[in-house]
Structures are given as structure tokens and as C-alpha cells.
Amino acid sequence: MEYRIAVLPGDGIGPEVTEQTLLVLERVGEKFNHSFQFQKLLAGGCAIDATGTPLPEETLEACKNSDAVLLGAVGGPKWDNLPGDKRPEAGLLGLRGGLGLFANLRPAILNKELRDACTLRPDIIGESMDIMVVRELTGGIYFGERGRRSGKMGEEAFDTESYSVGEVERIARLAFEIARKRSKKVTSVDKANVLESSRLWREVVVRVAKDFPDVTLDHMYVDNAAMQLVRNPKQFDVIVTTNMFGDILSDEASMITGSIGMLPSASLGEGEFGMYEPIHGSAPDIAGKDMANPLATILSAAMMLRYTMHLEKEARAVEDAVNKVLEEGYRTGDIMSPGKKLVGTAEIARLVAERI
Ligand code: NAD
Image 1: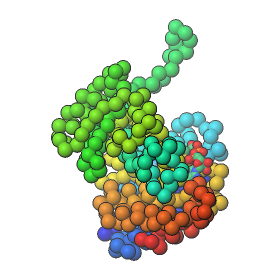
Image 2 (image 1 turned 180 degrees about the vertical axis):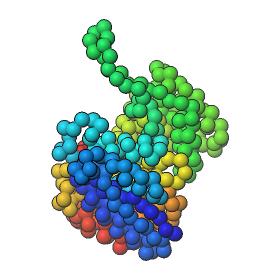
Image 3 (image 1 turned 135 degrees about the horizontal axis):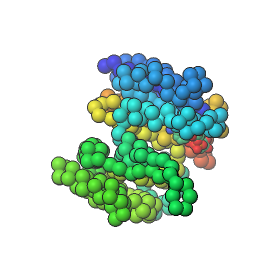
């Protein structure tokens, strides 16, 4: 099969980690007889420098015409003082909105080889952890009406949380479908004791659940979910939640694993299309030094093989190769521990490719 992939390396370590990931994808192509066409495009700070905008029209159009997007990371101190809508991060929001990516999937997996990196006690975490956070990505308070106005106590600012039945239905359906391929449990997180938008959210999730009788559904208020994640993370399989709650809980869940350089993500829309990126940022402190861990981006490419291309065997081959390299004791600096072999960005990616 032939696939067109729009590649947005971005800033900082973005270009290094994506470059190495493309080599791994090429190896997958060779081994399993697929052809990947890569088109490199500008987004983020590098796009601001070259064109004055973080998301040039040409980039968005090319992404729309591809099968999937692979993104490195955007941003850095050079662009920190620009106004909100001119910053590199605005390019990310533009991509999500422009590509209709309404769901963000963030697996928080603790690899048993990296148990020492976990921030929780061994008796709490056990052998491993595997949670999938499904976050609504194009609705809620990040996209609702906002503004400033004068009030009784001076100037006021407001942001609006609102959800429609359709928005909740499609994200809930996706969460149940994903749970079906895992441990068949969905926890819907809301704040239905206070927020009207959460009460609608809950009603719709309950309705969608009727189409998935094989999947168990429970509900949790977001404050409790934040506590339960650190008290007993093993109780969770799939968590489905709103844009803002998902933003916070997915960071909390991933941080439990302790290794930001290991965690992939996928943003999905209708159909097969998706954008795949590591959860970490552009790490300007280590950019250009061959120190960045490329495994999060490589694992994001594995998610691309699974969710956009439905190449399960190929996705597993990449994930198995990553596990093998870790089992053999190779580590980048961020996941290094005594007695292991320290390697750089290019070398660890080469080792992964070699094991596919
Ligand atoms: P960061 O994720 O870039 O870095 C946090 C820490 O983790 C740093 O010490 C960094 O060296 C380390 N780190 C991150 N990824 C690593 C990797 N792959 N290998 C080894 N170490 C790694 O977060 P930050 O420092 O808060 O932000 C830096 C810039 O990235 C900012 O401009 C921010 O806006 C941007 N950012 C972008 C995205 C994105 O593109 N999706 C996400 C988060 C932050």
C-alpha cells in the first residue's frame, strides 16, 4: 500500500525526533512492503520565521490532502513574547480545528523496563500501567465564547464551556470502540454535580453506552478522578472526558509513568485521518545535541499505523522493537538509570529500526 504523510517537524527537538521516526517508518515500509511518501511542511516557530504565521495555508492544505500528519513539537523562547494568536501554539489549535480533529488519544503506559521512572510506589503501580485517555479536542471551554467586560468589581473576563449532543456522542462512541479492543471499561469524567454542560455530557454518554452492552461504564467527578489517578491508577482502562478536563488528566496520567520522552498521542477526526505527535514539547534545552528521546514520536508513528492505516501487525512490530531495545538496556538521557547503556537520539532510533 502507498500512504502520503504530511510531516511537520516544528521547532527545537521536533526536527531531530521526526527525522529518526521517518527512518523507522521506512524500515516498516521495506519489511512489510508499503510505500510512505513524506512531505515536509512548516508549522510553529519555524513557520513564523519563514512566513510570518504559525500555520501557513499551504501547510493546512497539504495536511488535508494527506492520509495522516506526523508532528514533532512547536514553540520555544524565541517566540514566547508574541501575542496569543501569533504564537507557535496557535498553529496547533489551527491544525486541530482546521483538520476537524475532535478526539485526542493519549495512552499512558508504564513500560515494565522503566518502572523506576514511575512517580508512584511499587505497591500502588504494580507491574505496569496502561490507561487510554480519550479527550474531546475541538469543543468546550477552549473553543467557547470568551471576552472581557466591565463588572461590579472592575473588569471581568469570561470563557464559556458548552457541548452539543453531537459533540459528546461522537467522542463517547469512539471511547467505547477503543475500550472494546482493550479491557472493556470506560470511565466518563465530568463535573455533573455543578455544571449543566456536564449533565448533558453524562446523559449522552449513558445513551451511547446502550449500544455497547459488552463495555462497562462508570462515571467520576473530575476532582475525584484526579485523586483516583494517583491513589489507584490500575482501576482505569479508558477515560473519556471534555477538552479541559482531558488536558489536565492526560498530563497527570502521563506523568505517573515518569518518562515524557516515551509517550505518544493521536488526534483523530471523522474517517481514518489523524495527526500523530509526541506529548512532549520542543525541549529547547537539549535541542540539536542528539540527546532527545525519539521513542515518543516513534510510538506515535505506531499509533498512525494502527489507527489511520489499520496496519496492526506493523504497529506491533514497532512497539515490540521499542520494548526490545529497552529490554536490552539501551537508554537516552531522560530515562537513563545506573547500569544501562546511554545512547543518543539517532542511535536509539537505529536500534529500533534494526529490530523491526
Ligand atoms: P518540554 O516537553 O519541551 O520539556 C520539558 C522537559 O522535558 C525539558 O527538560 C526537556 O528537556 C525534557 N524533554 C521533553 N521531551 C524530551 C525528549 N523527547 N527527550 C528527552 N527529554 C525531553 O516542555 P516545556 O519545557 O514546558 O516547553 C518547551 C517548549 O515546547 C515551549 O515553547 C512550549 O510551549 C512548547 N510545547 C510544545 C508542545 C507541542 O508542540 N505539542 C507541547 C508542550 C510544550
